[in-house]
Length: 262
Image 1 (cartoon, rainbow, N blue to C red):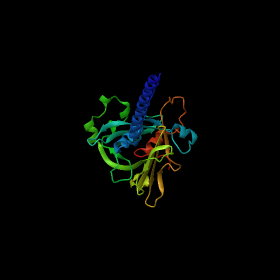
Image 2: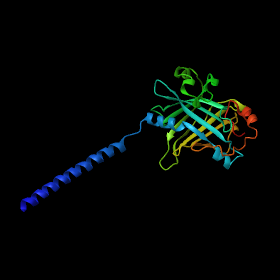
Image 3: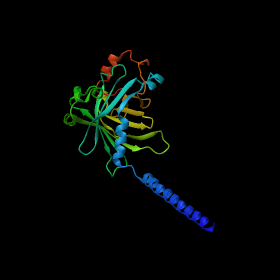
């Protein structure tokens, strides 16, 4: 009887040691996973992925039709640079006329330099042969410009936004802006322009582009706040597009720029 007790006790000790080993091993793995830092390229990929997709400002236009139009923002991967930077095609159009974008750009998304305080650098470029890119994302890949052509069509550098990971507790994932002095812009009497961008956890992208004259007066862009673009999760066919009574004239008015409210 004493032997049976000893044997049982020995087995319990072994089981206890095995259980402790499993818990300790699992704890080490969890600790390593929690300690694993996000790399600079992880941030760049996250921003590029978040920008891609079909997004609309229709909810904001419904709430405040006097200050916001119902716009479609569309972005998709175009190609990749030799250094790993991602190139995105980006366009904006009125909800009712997506086939006629009024703004077309190529974005280059890459990590900020190591010496910088930001995480991701988002640069906007004009497109050399812009007609070849209209509705780029909606076309089959074999009907799009090839990778080499896309690289060659990256033209004038327009703006660069420096994004940083949002602090814990905020709604956003990344946010940032251009430098305070902005970038040269001569549209509609402007001397320079600035851009702010925020990427939210629910897939929203908030953008705020504004142009200023030499005296610092705003001459184009929304004055009430950023545009709020939300992912296209449902059909919009049953939504009444607001402030589109003069779509044709508005398209001419904002051609070549992102003029939302003067």
